[in-house]
Image (cartoon, rainbow, N blue to C red; front, side, top):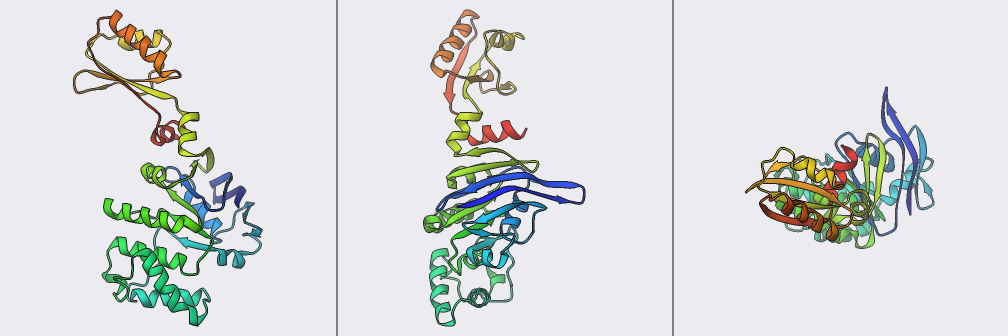
Length: 306
């Protein structure tokens, strides 16, 4: 169990973290989601022992990160947002250097390099100079250095930043494969990435935890189901009539392909669709579509960080 308990951190007069608490269970992929400046990187740097909090506690199992940073570092693999690579070194040389820094036994280093290069897909470029690699392969080198000592915990800060769509998918699959026997905490502001990878999500905003749960739990608890209505009416009081029936317009109306798109929050989809259809028929509005969908993580994110 990884637990972060009430950590605070200020820089001059700016409060970066304000009583942040959450936990990650063994074998779980936990996503820290939030807008830029929410406190994600600060949280991860404290967990990875790079910075100390002003107050609070971080425990990796029975290890107090603040009191025993050296012991904690042995348990952690860390990939910062900007991967610290030596471009003039070959991939093999760099991984060997990191393995030696991690105090891996000399007779085990070659075995570990072979294993992580296969896991991260670096075996094809193991003899190339890092400067020659694409951004995606450099990110793989960063992941390889983070797991070279086979840590139980991986901390990844924005692991797909700057990658193209194909590279993003490759890194996601790589993280999924690595997660089979590790606990992973990673930060992102990319909603699709968090939805695709995470078992649970912690949403930060302005240095505070504003929501926590699985993507489906957050969608169910924080945002209602949505009804999408497209009608051809140009009446100015369309929205007033819908609101007067007890419905809440979830988003600003927008032009659709054939008419006006209206998004309506719903507590009971089946009953509400019937009531909306009755309003449309009663007012003789041309109706082009009436459909529903459950709230997405994007809806949740926008709702609680707006």
